[in-house]
Image (cartoon, rainbow, N blue to C red; front, side, top):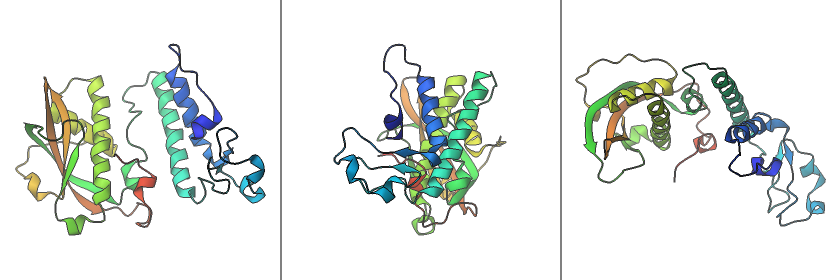
Length: 249
């Protein structure tokens, strides 16, 4: 809504997607100063907007409700969005300057900034299997549901984030499925991890992500499991993590 309300990028064969992406990021970076009242395709007249609402900042007025500022009481989330947009703009500049090892689509904000847990003691399985019921989306197995209840709605987001990183990593280098997952976990955590053989079982971990990979003409998965510990740097539990991270359908 912010992007559509502030600029229109002509869709044609010569459209520069990067330019449009940058414009959107700049808008999000500067969202604290946004003041947008839609004047087209709305269900009310400009005169219906109360003066006190029009003076609010940031302001993104609901197209169907002249008193509903969609950005009101979202200060914490907006600060995170603005910070992430600024960081991505810097990454784009780094890419344009030819810097290597830049992951523009690594998850933002960093997991430790929003997730109520930290993943620890990762275990990546070398065993692959043909997917019978999930050929595209990852899925998660959670053990000890009572203990994991504060974290369960966020675990799916970890799996989705890892899949997004895997796609980016795989486009840059051809590696084995297990190596692909190991590299993606390092990107996810923002630090290079050292891996060594283990006799641990996935069933002893708090959660297991099943990450789809394509091997030849078959859809398979690689398992990665981890334990969860409380993250003291995360926002209060009353905050809904879906305000920060998108959820899948």
